[in-house]
Structures are given as C-alpha cells and as structure tokens.
Image (cartoon, rainbow, N blue to C red; front, side, top):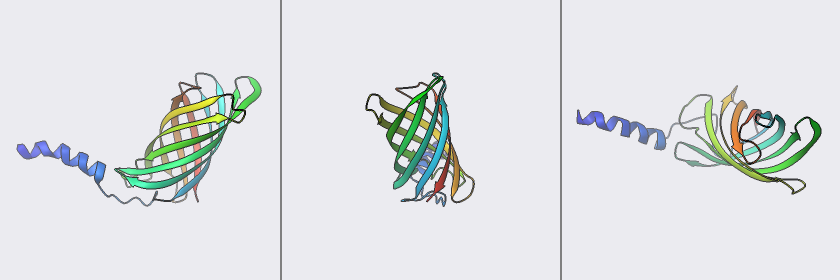
Length: 157
C-alpha cells in the first residue's frame, strides 16, 4: 500500500521533468502566422500578424518570446487602433508527443499613436496539421477586453 502513495508523485515528476521528445517544436524554432478574432464583450474584431521564437527548454515545455502587430476596430465604426505587442509564451510541448500543444502567454504593448496601452493574459493550444503548419486557438483577457478569442494559422520558418 505504501508504494501506491508514490505513484501520483512519480507521475508529477515525470510530467514536469521528463525528457519526452517532441519533433513538432524544438529550441530555436520560429513561427510566423496570421490570426483573426473577436473581443466578445466589446464586439470588436481583431486581425494580427504574429511571430514567435522558442528560446529555451524549461520544465515540461519551451519558453518563447514573440511579437504581434494587431489591428482592432472600434465596434461598428470603420476606424480602429493598431497595436505593437511583445509576448512571452510557455508551450507545454513535452506533455504529449502528439500534434496538440497547450500554451500560456502574457502580452503587453501600445497603440501606434501611443494613446492606449495594451496588456493581456492568454491560454490556448496549437494543433500541428503537419510538420510546418499549425492552427491555434487563443482565449484571453486583459485591459481592452475581458473575453477575446482568436484563431491563428502559423507556419514554422
């Protein structure tokens, strides 16, 4: 019976520090993508060009940094704001060997006019269609919106 107590601990250690190989994402891989989404609470559309580079292995995944150029309209009016955003991402790439990789991120930036700050936290997952192409879904909340969802298409460079 004593040995059964150690099984959950063993599983946690394996998940956190296991060296499971994942060919989909490796250190120094970089991705470029386009995304579209919606600030659900504000009914504002979002369009973005995104870049991400995997920097180092850490625990059950890869730490990455990236940037985004986003256009967000102002509701029903044709005007909007363009934002330049820096992002820190943690991809849980060692949890599964498959094509499905969950992630967490934090982002911050400003509008081009420097009249509006931007920050948010996001959670989502990336699904690799093949070795170079992936789809991602992001759900986030931040200063502008309490509920934003985005669909992204990324290409590994």
